[in-house]
Structure formats: structure tokens, C-alpha cells
Image 1 (tube, one colour):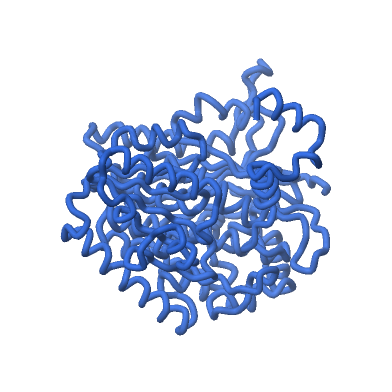
Image 2 (tube, rainbow, N blue to C red):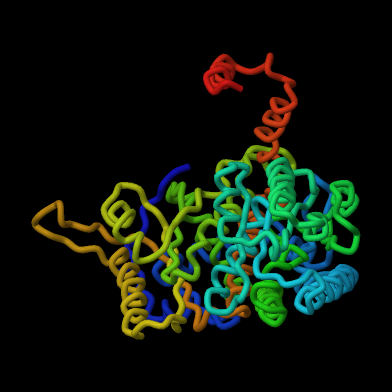
Length: 490
């Protein structure tokens, strides 16, 4: 993977008077600015040619038409149908399931489960990360419920999750596609015991299951009336649009959940119908491929300059690295590079932690800034103004750098960044933003010729842990692992 010399960003701006207008876009209430990346007409032309060679248009239509886009498992990816953008048949099924979900939300709000003050949402991976992001981003000044999320099998995580919950008035919402995941089932058992120990007469009556395998949930003691189903084609990291969004609807209200679906559908329409020169997720993927393949960038950093979006980097870590962290194509051929490591944090905290490396380190890291024009806090508006100024200043500083007679105070500059600016942070904007990242991930996968919808790499460690828990397979372990188990007394 050869690194090529690239023109300085200031030179690109000087040589291309229309650069900003060509590389900035307003889509679904979000402003995307790619002008501080090294994208130029040649890179974009090569990207379009590559997309044509890799069959991007047909792959995209297969996604929206219910075709098999997950060939290793022989499945479509139907998350777009959950927001009304898939094939008519998939959309009809999704709408019918959403009506049942709405009926359950109405029943809970009407008191069918008694007085509810809290929700313990149990899952792992996308079954938690999506709902947690939405509730944290939109629910701080809106939700009357105490919503806690639990994923880690560590008992300390359980203790922390239930510390502020009243078992007498808490709903247990369990999200698991297969309803067999070890961590989730272990935490479900712990939640049952927590309710029972607190004197709740019918613990099972307080449990709601969200799954693609309703029979498995029923076997675990959940009544059919409290099981909401989503399709096999909805992957966990794409599942917040489905029944897995129940906690979002309960915490924020049904209207807010619908707004998220509408915002995502708006981004769907853009991705599906915009031409490559103005297709924002595809352009972002062109930049991703350029920096990984031509510049050897092994990481990409995202910084949310809004405390409400503090969970966005964690959500994107799973979305991007689980989807595109593959080493072979759909045909089993090796690929040179796939997804970079996604990481990030929250501005301005990150400026005093990791930006030293971004400005003066020897590692080139493409940076993404996400900010919101309007704040939503009780403080002097000047604080939000200063927050935005910091975000904008960091992008300018990364690009421009600064020379000095003192090498310790010299900043090389020419470091790329993308800015994403939301007008407001509401359900529509958040839905569109998440859908943008989903489609960017899909576009990268098509350009690479890989399958973004399976995740077999997740299974190996889980399989070994399961065998060890059943006292099976210990004899085949390496000496180091056996020694660790012995030292831990297990």
C-alpha cells in the first residue's frame, strides 16, 4: 500500500475557487463540508469509475429492493424497510410490526403494566448502542423515565445499571436477535432475580422481549403478548429502527421515534437517487478509500462537539468496524485493506487529550467534526458559541498549521478534516445522521467488494467462552490461557 504525495489543502483552495461549493452539501437538514479533505476532481472521477466497476448502482438497488446483499447468510438487509424505504413487501411487514409495537407503547402509557418510572434495557452490541445513543442524545430534557442500559456480563455493570431503579416500577426490555446471546441471557436471569428478590409478584410479567426468534423468547418464559418481532434481515447494528427502538419510543414518545424514521428515510432517498457527484455517503466513502489506500491511514477519528452526541463515536465503532472489518471479498479473495480503526471523543475534552497527536504527531489521521448550530441547555448562549468556535478552529488549524523558528512550536498542517453541522438536534436530524453513516458503511463495502452484513469474527471468542463455561474444550487450550484460568481459580 504505497503512500502518495498529496497537494496541500491551501493549494487546493487557491487552485479551485469553487472548491467549497463543489464539496459542501445540504441534505436532510445537515450540512456536510468535505472541502478540507484532499478530494479533488481526479480522485472523485476515479471514485466514480471504481463504483461503476464494482456495481455500486445495482448493489444499492438490491439493498432497497430486498435483494440478497448478505450472500454468506443468504439474506437481504431489511433495515431500510423499517423506515419505509425497502421493497413494498418488506415495508408492509415492517409497518404491521410497527403497529403492534405502537399498541404496546400505548398500553404501557395507559398503565397496563402499572406505574412505570424506569426501564432496564438489556442487550449487547447494536441491541444497546443504537437505543442508548438516541435516548442520550434526545432524552435529556424530554424523558420522564429513568432509562438504564445494560450490556456487559460483568456483575458490576448490573449493579450500576439498577442502582437508581425501583424494581416495583421498572420494565425489563430485552433485545436480542437470536435470544441466545450469553451476555444478554445472563443479564436477563439476573434481572429476574432482582425483581423476585425485591418482592415483585410476577417478574416475568415485567419483561418485554425484542427478537427475530420469538420461539426462543417464549422458551425463556416471555409471554407472546410481550414479544415484539423484527425480521431476520435486520442486523443488530442496524436494528434501532425496528422493535429494538421500543425503548426510544417509551423514553422520548412515539412522535420522536417516528421523526427519527422520517429523517432516516429522507437520507435513504438522497442516497438512492442522488448522482455520484452529489451523493454524500458515496463521496464520504471515496474519501475513506483514498486515505486508507493511498495515504496508509489506519484510523479515522470522530469528535462530537455536542455533549448530547457523546455516544456517537462508540456507536460508529461497531457500525463501521463490525461491518467492514473483513479480510476477504464476497468471493473469498483477500483484500489489501478494509475499514480503518474508528475512534473519537467529545469536544472540547478531546482537545486536551488527543489533539496533540493529531496536530503534531507523525500519524496522519483524517478527522471528522460533528456539531449542532442550536444548543439545548440552560446556560448562557455564549457557552454554545464558544463550543462551536472551538470545533471550527480545530479544523482550520489542522489544515493551516503554523511555522515557527522553534521546531517544538511548528505545526505541519495539511491534515484533513470533514465537518458535519446539524441545524438542530431533533429526531429527524439524528435519524438522518445515523442513516448517513449506515449508507457510507455500505458504500465502502461495495467499493471493497466485501459483505458488510455478516460478522463471523465476533463468534470465535464467544464460542470458546461458551465451551469453557460448559467445561468443554479446556484440554485444547494453549498453555497461557490455561495458566490464566488456574491463577484466577476457574
